[in-house]
Image (cartoon, rainbow, N blue to C red; front, top):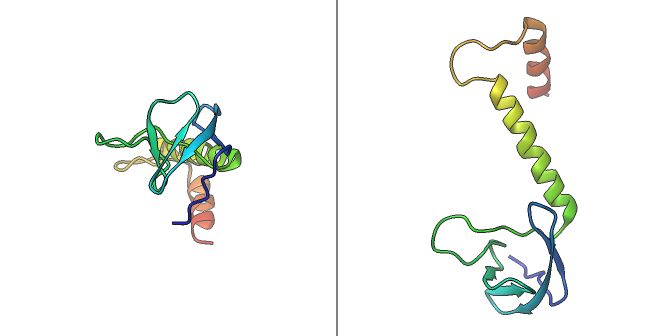
Length: 101
């Protein structure tokens, strides 16, 4: 993975809070006001306990990721993994057309 992290770069968290990169090493970087270091490869806190706090290089990437997650969750609620859905035959046909494009 190419290292695009540079001192002074602004990154964003899931609440759109901005973080300014203050220090960059070979594997990790640090941000002003944050006591933990971030993995350059994963863009997350250096943590041994599963997923850490994630930062994004671009605000639009973050917004697109949030929208994608929201839409996927809405679709999952309707498309139950078992049993029948509440969708009409016409709605199912429209979904099938979209999926099979």
